[in-house]
Image 1 (tube, rainbow, N blue to C red):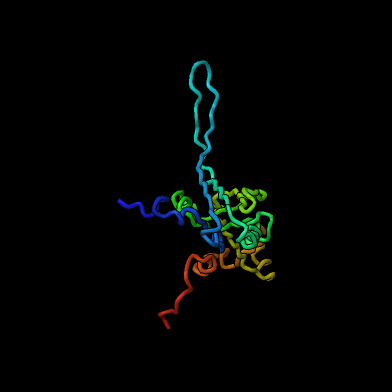
Image 2: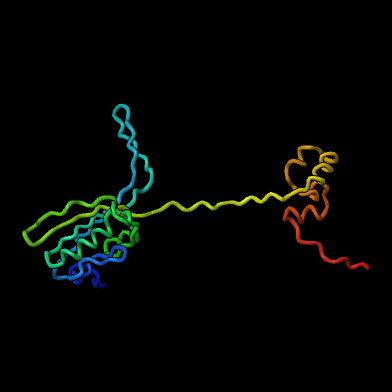
Length: 202
């Protein structure tokens, strides 16, 4: 057994965090990151009748909540302000999504977050300050595939011929004449067969 990643043996690993392109604290002696990660699921509690217990129904998992408190000294104040501007949900990056690197995030299978809220700066002491961000796990919905429909063209001359031969409804459908007339060429135009090969007979 090994506890190499435990806070006891690797305090610096747990007291720092990587978010997007920034790492906090820039100097381990001048700051600490306090990371809290919590998980939950939706549970619908239905009212019970008489003396029966209420019935419960699971309705899916909630996105993981992540809370990070940045505590820093006056010596790195300016650097931290640049970092906070980068992370600000009302800033140019819109709060992410950002990749997150921290043991607690890894333990809860969180790889990316979107920042919802950033608190005002608190003065812990005259020379130490604190800012907290609240975020949610970023879990975007899968993109729907766009299906492209290509309608074969039909000449006006063939449209008139098809109208007389097979009816107005099919002629206005935009399908090629070979489909209406049937045969191998119609299957090729519908993509159901390959091009006809050369005739073996002279």
